[in-house]
Length: 125
Image 1 (cartoon, helix red, strand yellow):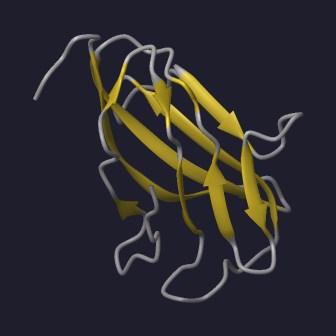
Image 2 (image 1 turned 45 degrees about the vertical axis):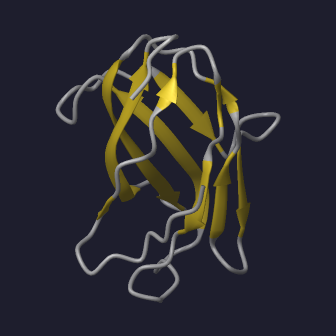
Image 3 (image 1 turned 60 degrees about the vertical axis):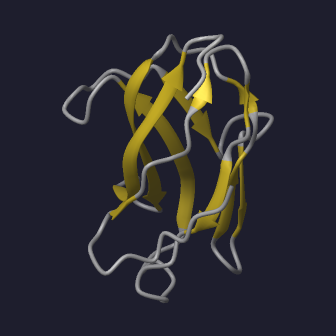
């Protein structure tokens, strides 16, 4: 699954495709360019998080570029990233996700956000 996070409005709003709880989530790819320009400062980390709501500060699911081994790949020449596939550990619900990069000062810049639906096993649309 791929998405272009090249928003006119920043951060980009993008709802990810649904996944079944306990199934392998396919992850997603995109780029961190802003209106076709690379971010204004170098990147030290990229963080994908899932929260119960947009206002919630909880971190139910986190994937990081800086993790060892890396859970997000990032091409620093093109700013193309991939959040790698993983078994979805969350219970059935609608969640809020965000993708943030940290600049060299450690300041966060959220480049994408939206909803992701986690369906129960046996769910049929």
